[in-house]
Structures are given as C-alpha cells and as structure tokens.
Image 1 (cartoon, rainbow, N blue to C red):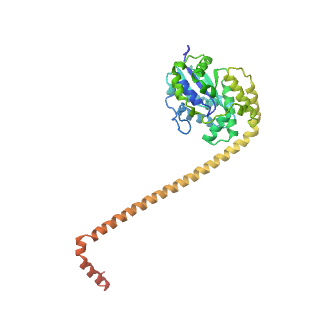
Image 2: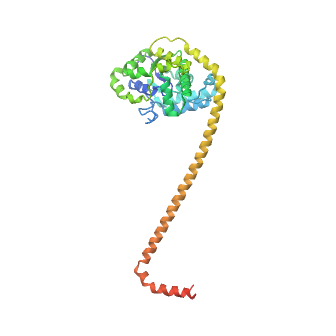
Image 3: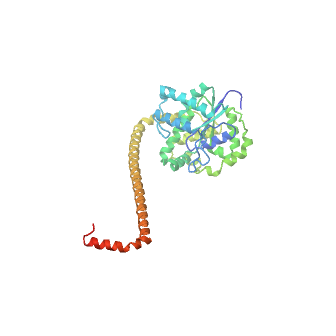
Length: 361
C-alpha cells in the first residue's frame, strides 16, 4: 500500500450495478471487509453482498431522517447534511466504523446508499484521519432496470430515474476526491487488469497484487452472476430511453475508458433540478397513497393471521377432545370385554327390569 495513513476504498454505484462483485475483488486484493456482513441471498446475490449489516441499517435510518429512502426519486436536501441531525449521525457513523473495521489500514466500504450519503461521510473520514479513495461503478441502465424489476417489481421508468439519481449524486459528491471509474463489462472481461488499473489511478498499492489472486477472482466471477445482459447500443441508440440517461451512461463509459468526458453531467443535473418541482408533488402524493395502502394491507394481513391462529388453536382443542373421547371409548370397550363385566351381566339385567317398573332410580 502507498505511504501515508489509513485509507478507505469507497465503492459507489447504483443498486444492481455489480458493486458487490467489485467489492469482493478489491477484498481479495487486501482491502478489509467489515465484521458483520449481510448474509448472501440465493435469489438475489448468491455470491454475497460484502457490506456491513449495521451500516446498511444506519444508512436507511439516515435516509428516513433526511426525508427519503434508498428508492426515493427526489434529490435529498443538501442543507440537511449541515444540520444537527446529520451531526448526530456522523458521530454514530464514526463509532460504527471503529467497531466494524478496528484498526485496519485499508478499509473497504460498499453500499449503494453511499452514492447519496457521501456528503455525510466526508467529514467523518476527515475527522478519523482516513483518506477516502472512491471507485465509481457503472452498469448498463437497462440491465439495472431489469434486475430491479425482478427483485423489487419496479417499472423501467422508475428504475432508470433511480439509476440516474445515483450516478449523478455519486459523481458530484466525489469531486475533488481521488477516484476512478469502472464499468461492469471491464470488471467481467479482465478482473485482475481492471483492479490493477484502479490501483494506479487511486495511487494505491494493493496489499495483495491482483495478478497473485487472479485464480481466486476467476473462480468468484462466475458467468451466472450476470442475469441480465444488454448491448450498450440498446441505450445509446434507443430514443425510448430518456436523453439524460443515455448521456449520463455515455459520460461514464468515457470516464471508465480514461477519457475526459467534460461537464455534461452538470447539464443533466440542472434538467432534473428544473423538472423536480413538476413531478415532486405528484410523487409525494403517490408515496403517501402507497403508504396508506400498505398500512391497510398490513392491518388485513394481521387480522387474517389472528383468525388463522384462532382456527389453529380451535382445531388443536377439537383434536385434543377427540383423543380424550377415543381414550374413554377404548376404556369402555376394555371394561365391556372384561371377565367381571360378563359375570355381572345377570345383575345388570335385573337392574334394567327394576328400572323399567320404576322400582329403581
């Protein structure tokens, strides 16, 4: 690793953009993972997420406090990051980094929420004396949209706008920091060469050189990791895809190729800033309606669960009573088949006759 103090490699990228795979590659080269990792999920990320469970929960809490969520289409209020709630979260974030990473000299931090929360992280890392090194990962937006549709049921329009929000926020917030860009295709085509290039651009010597872990990288990067595949022209030459998405994707491809793509992202961000007042109110109303419907659904699901539990309890009681009846019947049959019962048959006959004449109660 290059001379100097502690460093943190921050993997920034939209959800479903290969950030998990990239994080694992960087970890194989010696960047330290947090202690409490999110468990792999066979139907989502069978190869693992490589992110801290506690950090993900804290990020969601921060986004909620800031009035958003990971899938909010609106921009976060930049002024919120300078307020008292943000200061309290910065203290918690610093404590969490200490508990998750200890004294590791090279930290690896990955969570797509970082794209929108980097302004909160920068002062925390500065206070801890940790230099941030940013890797911005980009994937074909239509592949991301297909993956989000499969995982979350999002429509393509929402997914593309989310993709745009994340890549614009990550690029803008990381300006002035040491950073490098990478596409999903570069990572899959040549993992060791791509990670080596990232190290050069970040001026970072990996503790484990990429060529020494090439076999581990190849074993990890199974073709099955890529469930949705599109050609770049399906975005760049597709007029049905919003111009802003196409241009942002073109910009990031150029940046990952080492070109100087210019300041085109600022124009796109300006377009979004102008448009947000038009769609922001409508989105807020839709989200309120969705929350109301979700609350109603939870209520009816709760009622159904309670009724089901009552039915299960009643069924168990009936089955218990039936077992008691069966046991008594078996006992009666045993008595009726006993020698004493047969011997007393004449006595029972006399008793029945007396009862018939009303002489015995």
